[in-house]
Image (tube, rainbow, N blue to C red; front, top):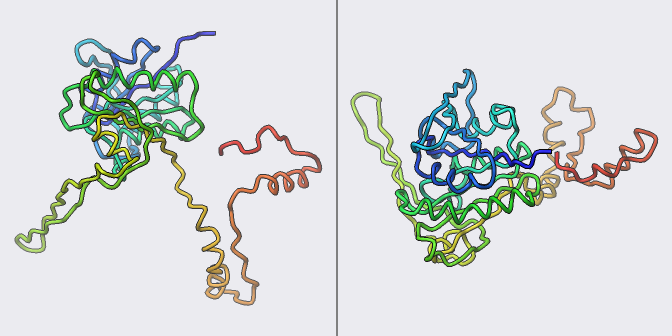
Length: 303
């Protein structure tokens, strides 16, 4: 059995971004790095995918030393293509970055870097998103060297299904980085306002302005860790269901409200029942339907 580890490297800044090359240098000793990245900048594109047209990939050299493929799609497209066999070998891990600029707080929802990692996690692959503080980082290579041990540990131990590590590094020389903190997401990094300009006729121009917000003093957050010279690692999980709301919605008796406007109001209104998982009840129903015991090995498996 081969011991070569296959690492998918992608980003949202594009195949020619310096952060991609820095991370490639740092990851090469860990295994075979399969590089598939967008052919241009796709920042803040989140989990967009391309539909309605074929995707095209071209083999290219980047940073004058590495071979990879440039795809005319999104970061999520790159991960999907690789997971479905673009390289033949399915990658064992998805590494996205190193992004120009941190991905912190509520803004992770917009990030193409974080989105690539989330796409990997949803496809059953452990995934790490890596970003470096500042829009023109000076210490990409140092940051990539510090991120490599995180990737190495994930390769060795894996991650629970659906979990993503969002790693943000300060733009500092290695010797000045103070350590690692596991953090929660801080506040949104910008306040935004819209400027409306009227023109001739019915045409108007809308410009959205972003203004920096001070989030650095919230202890335990990704913002605070980075501001004090620490590497921030935030575990993210793509589960949008808020189970706390099940009881609230049951109390609304929506089944009765909907039944009142149906063509047959005499039909008893169905009761809205919670879909919250109940492993024991589900196992009992399955056993009854099959007339026997259930296979316990799959209980609790991610769907």
